[in-house]
Amino acid sequence: MPSSLVTALDDIVGAGDPVVSVAPVTLSAPGRAVPLEVRVSAPATGGDLPVVVFSHGNGWNLDGYAPLTAFWASRGFVVVQPTHLDSRRNGFGFDHPVFPSIWTERIADLTRVLDQLDAVEAAVPGLAGRVDRDRIAATGHSWGGQTAQALLGARIVDEEGRVGDDMSDSRVTAGVLLAATGLGGDDLHPFAQANFPFMRPSFGELATPTLVVAGDHDQSRMSSRGPDWFTDAYTHSPGATDLLALHGAEHSLGGIVGYEVAETTDEDPERVAVVQRLSTAYLRTALRVDGGAWPAARDALRRAADPIGHVDSK
Image (tube, rainbow, N blue to C red; front, side, top):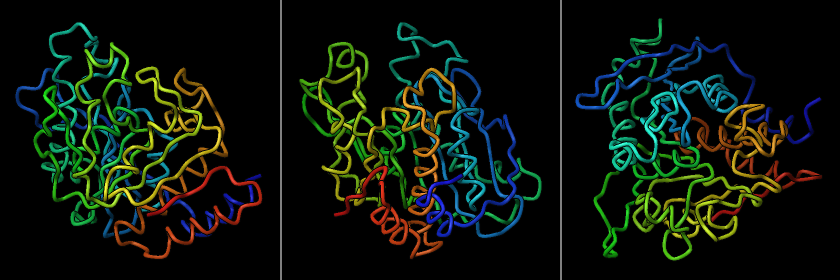
């Protein structure tokens, strides 16, 4: 039986529609170490469908995160999931020559998706002409959150303390960052400092409307900071105006990666159900589908008898 909170959220985001999902779809990526493959999922019917580009966490691929991405597609979004170069399917470990540039290739993958929406539409039978390309969100989990936040405006600070290039994309008008890494500095463990230059973000330039989702039991192995590290995008950016903090949640936020997988250390179907619905409500409002969905969802969470989390807003 769904909880009263999930039932209330279902009343806001509506019942799901059948989904058509096609993979692998190969997109053009000249010079990339391996071909760029994506999964495209979309509702079987309906028009004016917004686009959600999703970036996976380290090691994953286009087949992961079905609890989240399939839910979004069933609620009216065209969801595109690339397999990045760091996927375990590719076998590029930390010592491989391609690894140092993977973080920039990840960002390029999302841009390639947006550049090739014609191919994305054509890949799914019956989808052509049903996509609204003026409503696009960039989303991601963990390393994927860092990847997505670059399109939202976040930049990288170099070793000299200078803020790096702007890699934002004006086609992207909303974002959802799930367990995205925070600020760098002395709190980073030596391995992260040596191998992950992208873990030195500057959030001051992130101006695109964004929801940050973090677990209050998420202790990173990359930083000595506590779970608040994963809320830095909310704390330090003008665009991330909303923070969903989940009580008791660890890095997989209850199982958005998938159920019964090694990364899901805090499996909790109720938590996943809440993340599914709250993120959907946020996207519906941020992408101008339903202006009342996000305020109503926040109120439902606030009124819950045994709240699974809370929302802070600027």
